[in-house]
Length: 187
Image (cartoon, rainbow, N blue to C red; front, side, top):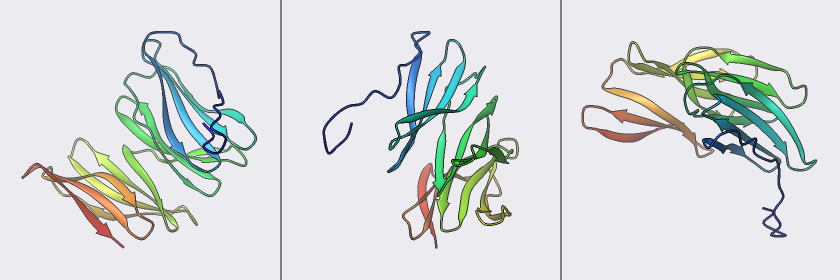
């Protein structure tokens, strides 16, 4: 809906092939919308990019088959999208999409989540479900170098989200010992 004119505009018809089809919006800003159409019965997950200004719709990712209900996170830096999505059985990776050239490439093939752009880096959590540890990784948007900036060492404390308020990077930490969640503030 255009908040100024109060008019609705249809972006796309849902390819309803089962009773378990849904659409989930993963990212919105002033000129784009990223959303997924998911059909659990037919095991399809299709990600679309809607450009608001020119009203164009582009398929970003077409995944078939997909097993579980996806959890997708998207971050943006200028003309680059960073999409975290399931590529295998509970394996999530981060892929970079160039909005000008449509080129894309994986930037993290290890199990990961919660991509967040802060200053000149993409930050994300790398998750090791076997060792029960998590790492905060900083990926330089300038040269593509990765650096682990923090990590947990056991299953008593682990990172479950990253956020930014524009001034700090905020880590949401789960503490198993006392069943609590805390935010840690990293400048």
